[in-house]
Image 1: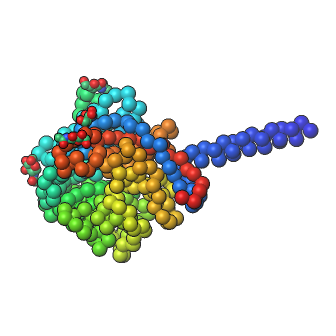
Image 2: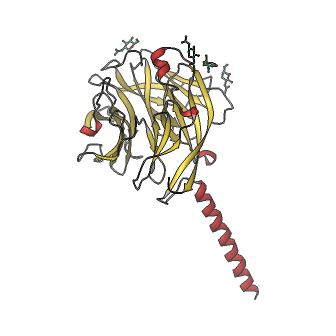
Length: 346
Ligand SMILES: *[C@@H]1O[C@H](CO)[C@@H](O)[C@H](O)[C@H]1NC(C)=O
Ligand SMILES: *[C@@H]1O[C@H](CO)[C@@H](O)[C@H](O)[C@H]1NC(C)=O
Ligand SMILES: *[C@@H]1O[C@H](CO)[C@@H](O)[C@H](O)[C@H]1NC(C)=O
Ligand SMILES: *[C@@H]1O[C@H](CO)[C@@H](O)[C@H](O)[C@H]1NC(C)=O
């Protein structure tokens, strides 16, 4: 009797922890259901000055957000808790702007730096470089990060997204949007090679913005092509070399920019003034949010803390039209998008 009661109590406890687990999995991004789609509530984290194009971001292990600017050759740290103003991390003198950023080892980031400017598109071919940005000694307002140039790419057209191949690899991949090519860069030897080139990566306009965001999962390269409005993939080797023709996973996605996967390999795509969703299982691309704060969305990353692991941080450049008119009325931002998963048919 006593042991039965104990067993019941035990069962109850397990039940509680199971339902707690179920509840937690509902609010975590471990969604395994194929018929649920995420929606998001946006909130403003940091407004840069009007006329600032915030291009990309990476999240540090301590949760702080590193953002690259295209309109100045700078990386800033943004506090997700809004307790401190954005702090300058590094200025790349002799260049005009920064694009992709990725962390390879803890607090060691790599940044795409070159002469991009919305005013002189198609930019300066051959000006593109990749820099190592060491954050280990960075102290806000005291010690800037240490930056060293890893490689220059005199054959480049317009560099854009950058990604690692795997946590154990020292090789990075970099998208050349203007050429429709993906390069590899060995961060130890500095060796570089053209590793992927595909009709689905090619630009179709002038200036050329073909392959843009890139990510690798299990020896598959995933990419967006802004001008072909598609999200695609191609099998690659352990050193990044394309092994077969690329496939379009989703088409008709207007001007996709950079993207990120959740832990279930669902993709969240910036671009076209919104954040969109492509399920790992396929199916139609849906809108997560097209809130006004997301105008000019450029890239997304998940938070790395318990409190924000189900939230996306989104960088934006504000309305594109202001870069043509020169009448800047809206800032580039870092926006937080809190996701929730809803069962349903949308
Ligand atoms: C990039 O732009 C800077 C500033 O305008 C200029 O000094 C530099 O020579 C340019 N670099 C290349 C490779 O064109
Ligand atoms: C860094 O300096 C700026 C400008 O003086 C100040 O507003 C900000 O609070 C400082 N940040 C920290 C974390 O001390
Ligand atoms: C700039 O844009 C704002 C908002 O659209 C508009 O009210 C203003 O008249 C514009 N200024 C100029 C000089 O065009
Ligand atoms: C941007 O410009 C608008 C219109 O001139 C102004 O209301 C706003 O305060 C500016 N924002 C920033 C962050 O400077």
